[in-house]
Amino acid sequence: MSTVLDIYDPELYVEGPIHETLAELRRTQPVYWQEMPGEPGYWAVLRHADVAHVARHPELFSAEIGGVILENQPPERLEQTRNMLLMMDPPRHTEYRKPLAEHFKARVIGELEDRVRELTRALLDGVEGDVEFVHDVAGVLPSQVVGGLFGIPERDWPNIRHWAEQSTSQQDPELAGDFDATAEVTKMAIYAIQFAMARREQEPRADLTSLILAGEFGGKAMSDLEFGSFFTQLVTAGNDTTKTMLSSGLELLLQHPEQLAALRADPKLLPGAVEEILRYANPLHYFRRTATADTEIRGVRIKAGDKVAMWYTSANRDEEVFVDPQRFDIRRNPNPHLSFGLAQHFCLGVHLARLEGRVFFEELLSRFPRIEQTGNSRRIRSNLNNGLKSMPVRLSR
Image (cartoon, rainbow, N blue to C red; front, side, top):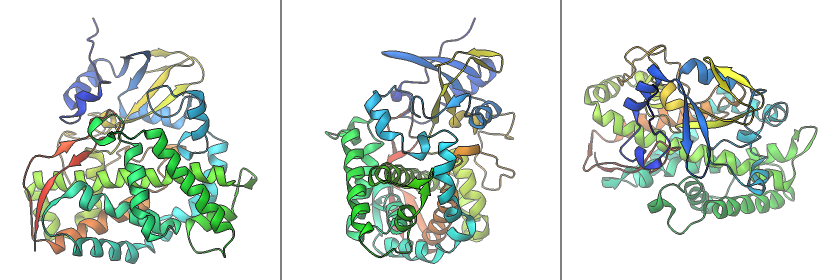
C-alpha cells in the first residue's frame, strides 16, 4: 500500500527542505501524485533521470500551456506571462532566446568581472559589525548587476529589487504584507515599457536593453509590451535566485567551518564551492510542466493535461547520481546538479550567477577574517522558493 505524504503545503518548508520525506519517496514512489487544495493535484518527479527526461521533451511537457508554478493561473494572467522566456515552448522559445544567447556566453560575461568586483567592494565597504545578511548584503548585489546590464539608472535599482522580491514572496504573509504579487509584477512591467519607449528615442548603448530593442525575435522586432514581460522575467530571475545563492551559501559555510577554512586558505576552491552551494541549497524547489499527450514516466501513466513538477530539491540529492548526497562537500566532483535546469530552458544567466558567486565570496572572505552567525536564520514560507528571509551575522575586519 502506498504511503500518503504531503509535499505541497508551504508551511512544511518553513523549517527547511523536507529531505527525509523526499528520500523516502525516491525509494518508494519516485513519480508521486500530490493532491492540492481547491484544484487538481500534480505528479512530482523526484529522480534526477526523470527530471532530465521531462526537461528534454518540451513536446510532451509544456511550459506554455499552464505556466511553471503549481497553482493554475487565470487565462488573463497566463496571457500576461506568455512573453517570458521561462514560459515559452520551442520553436518560439528558441526564436526569442537565440538572439540573446551570444551575449550570455562565458567569454562575454567574463568581461564583466571587474565591474562585478567593483560593485561588490562598494557594497562591502558599507557593511561591518552586526548586519541582517539576506536583505542588507546578499540582496543588494544582484539587482545592481542586473540593473547595470540593462542600463537602468542607479536611482531605480532599489525599485527593481523591491518589485522582484515582492513578486516571489506571496506564500509568506510576513514578506507579502499588503502587497499583491500581480500588481508588483505589473509595476515592473510598466516601468520596463516606459523605459523601452524612452530608450528608443536615444542613441543605442552597449547594454542589454539596446541589444533587445534592436534585435529580431521570431522574425520581428520586440514590441514595448513584449519587452515589459521579457524584462520582468530576466530581472526577477537574476535577482531572487542569486540572493538565495549568496545567503544560503554563507549559511552553509558557517555550518561547515572546516570547509570555510579551506576556502580561505585556497580561493581556487571557490568555483566548486559555488556549484555545491547550488546543489545543496538550490534556490527553487521545482518548476511545473503540463503534459500535452498521454505518456509514462518510470512506468507511471501520465494523462494529457496533467501537471508535472520537476522537483530539483529531490533530484539534487538522488542517490543514483550523487555519492553521499546529504553531505555538503565543496570538493564534490563531478557535480551534475539540476539547479540551472536542463536542455532548452537551461538558465540563460548561468555564467553570470557563477561569476557573482565566485567574486562575492572572494571579496567577502578576504575582507572579513571573522564572520559569525549571531542568531537563527529564518526561512521563506514557500514550496517554490528555497531561501532565507533573514540571517543575523557579525562581520569583523
